[in-house]
Amino acid sequence: MLASVKRAMAITAQLNRLTFNDADEVRALFSELIGKLVDDSFLLIPPFYTTGGADIHVGRNVFINQNCTFYDLGGLEIADDVMIGPNVSLITSGHPLEPSQRREVVVAKPIVIERNVWIAAGATIIGGVTVGENSVVAAGSVVTHDVPPNTLAGGNPARVIRSIHD
Picture 1 (spheres, rainbow, N blue to C red):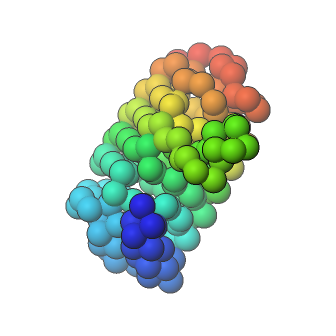
Picture 2: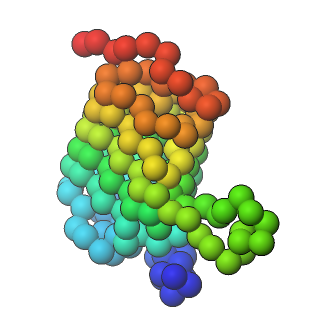
């Protein structure tokens, strides 16, 4: 795990020297980070932070705004047409509550972001959560439970506010 973190730190240091105008270089470095070629429609605005990268999967037409943090140890699936606002944290890993185990054990659960989701600025999503298709996570929300498809969720902890219809 330490080798994976060191590798990610080296790649993200290079990535974070780039600007919005360096989209092709950003895509190349992000592809190296996750170990898979991202689609030409993928757009990320640095800076970006992650613990590993290898457990991140992104679809087509994904936009990730600046200053996002992805702790991907538990696995992070981002489907097509997802928009992620600035300062969003996707945190798949953590530590046990028991003080004697906190420094010894890492607990990790996947996050799944389904198609056409918008995660607004400053939201945090915790491992084990699925955000359903077409949903919106409101700015500043802390998502600890699944968000059903076609809904607006917000708050801390986030709850469904209303349905979304086209």
